[in-house]
Length: 459
Image (tube, rainbow, N blue to C red):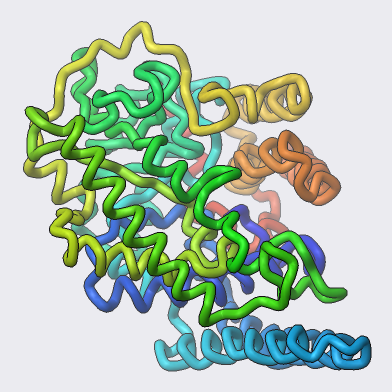
């Protein structure tokens, strides 16, 4: 989730955060609290937003005042047009919002603290694509401030798991990661080993650095996260077909959405997912430590927000793993028991889970200007030296977020992405002009644990 709190409202901006709280974070929290052995990575930039002043009160106002009104208006419009079933579905779906409001209230308004009890992995401060940064000093600070944020918020006990933003890996990153205390990262290795290869089912250890590299299994992930994956099934709720106020009362097959039918299908797909995963391990995990390890990594917002039934599906997966005898373990626990296979990564090209498995989603022709703008900004901060105070470093990190180039590459909310880039670039220019005492209030709670001193350390 990019930092959207306080940066715009409808149709682009902090409304994304409120919707993710309703559809993804609070429903997933119930599953985690029930003991589901899932690995949760909380990115610092999401935590920055959930920690912001007044977040719970503003969420309640959004539910009661904004969504209460928009659901009523859309339902009335549907009835006036003779679409009773769509109106009924809009009224039902508003219960998701009031239920989320009540769930947050029952936790004292502290969603971050509740999620933090389950957060095993952290990430870079503002989700920058680390291989595209210009210098190691800023890479070091993106990593270190992300780890500091995790420790400050959730205390000791971090096991060294670090989510590489966009799964972007290049071998030179391994040493700064290790020096910061990172012990394990996930990598996308489909282009190297081939889709469905057995090499994806075992953790690896870099021979030169000693860092543990855990391949995510694209074959398994694609059952969920692909154009033809489960979420495309006809009875599921259509994410792309909106009412006037961006509500979704239709199913993928064009009819009025039937929640009970869709929930039943989600459980069927959970059974299928576990059966396919177990079959993959039987066929290709023989002889591997522990019988093989399948890592299915998903953006949290896919579950519940983009795929409305996603959390229901995930709960079904947890149940089906027990029923079908498939071991479901947190990644840290799996790595404690499995011996990685040593590999030489020195000649591996940069990789990510973006288009084509490389970095082109964030550096290709459509976004080359963004990549150059980000690198030029970074070099400008480094050149400023002691004049680059905390406001400048935080503005730079805001500019480096992977989300802006991703939105432009994928033609999603492009004006908003461009607006955010321009705004953070202007804020950086002002901060550099004003020096170490520059005001950072415009950045709100973004990257609050970044230290300017880290960029001035001798190389």
